[in-house]
Every structure is written in C-alpha cells, then in structure tokens.
Image 1 (cartoon, rainbow, N blue to C red):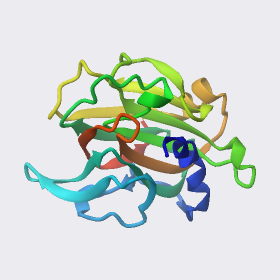
Image 2 (tube, rainbow, N blue to C red; image 1 turned 60 degrees about the vertical axis):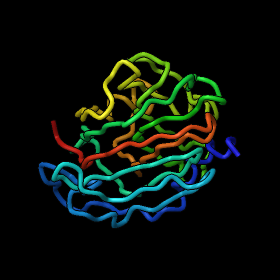
Image 3 (cartoon, one colour; image 1 turned 90 degrees about the vertical axis):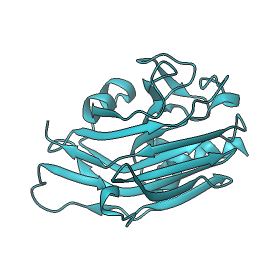
Length: 219
C-alpha cells in the first residue's frame, strides 16, 4: 500500500548502526559501489521490490535501480559525525522520467532517483527526521516541500528535475549539517543512516536509475 511509505524513515530504527572510530579520512565512504560490493546495505520493501544490483556501465561499476510499480529501498545504518565530514557527495543519472507525477501529493509521491539522510529519534521513533534529495518530475530545481506522507518530518529537496537530461551523469554535493538546520530545525552533529530509493508504486510507472559512489567529506 502506498501509505507504507511513511514508515521508510522509521524502518532505519531497526538497522544496526556502524560508528566510525577515530579521525575520518578525507573521504568517508558510505556507498563504495565501484568496489562491486553492497556490504552493510539492507533492503526494505514497501510495495513490490525495486531491483538493485551492481553493474558495469561504460567501464565503471555502479548501482543500478529498476522499479516497475514498486517501492523498496536500500538502507545503510552508519553514524556520521557532521562536524568532521558535513558534505555528502555522489553522482547519479536516470534513464527515463516519470510522467505526470505531482510528487507533492500522495498519488505522485514517486521518484526516479532519491538519496536521503536520516536522524534517528531512537525509542521516540516519532521524532525521526529525514532530508530527501530527489530527482523531481514536476517540481523545479530548488523546490522544497514536506513529504506527502510524513509531513515535515521528511523534507524533500529537488536537486534535479524534468529539465535535466536523461542518460547523463550529474555530480552532487550537499552540506547536510546546514540542510538539517535549515529544513528541519535540527542542530544535530550526527546522522544515523543513508538511504537510496527508486520508487514508482503510486504512479504505477517504471524507472531506471544509476547511482555512483556516495561519500562524506570535510569540504
């Protein structure tokens, strides 16, 4: 059921969280897909199953996601100190756009590609919050809105839109610590998990996306 998406951010409460000990390297890797591994990433299914696999694309190993009216995500519990590495870096591309999807309402709450960070509320699960960086269909780049299901506990940020090219890699960098403060009013120094999801269950569409390595950096 589409309403199960509200539990996306809560699902991370049940994932073991790895903690980095000591001084982080220049690049604190979260998704090392170029190594061919999905170690420590776990699948959470909501409606059907999006297929995630490491593939070779033009000589590079990347994560491929294929969704056919499905919604499942990959989650990695990893506590990251944003005082040391506040910037999340990644690259992504989509092969097709979702048509007529108004992602600001429940019926259109689908994304060809999205990556999000989660601050756990611990036992007070209702305090869990997330920032979603999305490839929007109808919303313009720069648009920010509360998730159609989770409200202002999960804020959506359109980094890419229908104006961006398909089958083209785009590189992103976000100051996660600043985004948490601006969008959620959270002055936290840590996040507890990173998640990836390509989902098309509400619109009953299809989407294919690719994700490159994800890492955090000092600047």
